[in-house]
Length: 253
Image 1 (cartoon, helix red, strand yellow):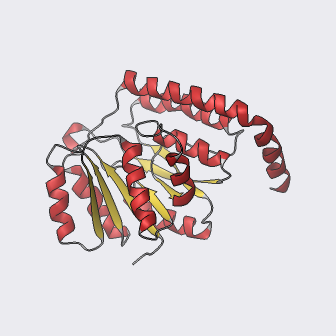
Image 2 (image 1 turned 135 degrees about the vertical axis):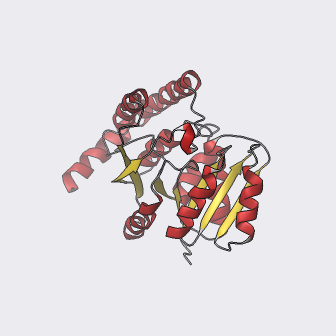
Image 3 (image 1 turned 120 degrees about the vertical axis):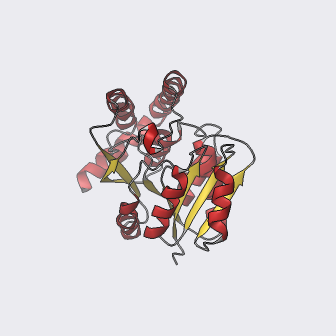
């Protein structure tokens, strides 16, 4: 049983796919927590039943849907209170590679001060609009961190050190919805948490395969635009401090 690292799965109306995701994660890691973000599709009851027969699975149920970032924060706070130091986040819908959980956890255990970021390897089924659209967010994230090395700003299969991320999120009202993943890596870079990138496949499941997407093109791209506006302003304010730090790091690497 791991006492430092756990798998954290935020879940909102994922359908039956969440059970397969949780079971796949449990097959790879002894401690898996699911944060149900106010689901109303019947998945909460199924998760309760699964957890009742599995001591390695813990379920946190939020009273209403508040967004992915809010679900992650609830998990971070509970994990920190229980003495854990790191969480590996993965989506509930089966897009992320559970088989790589041990590899990512080992990388985190070897470099506990770093964050381990999945860098997506897309299959032929990946929508071109989504694949190409993320390049914009990635470009901004790397500019805002002076190219510290964020391989992908949106891919949610990652290992975070809990304390730095918890401190960042508790200090601001944003990072609660689709803006969580990119803002988390940028602000962690600003806090001195070094990114380590590892390739990981991503699957875009069809409806027949049980795929569920809550992405809304206009709503979520507007949220990302506002997020990068905030981050750019924060970057300008931090630039006098970030630039010398970045130059020093280049010299020492």
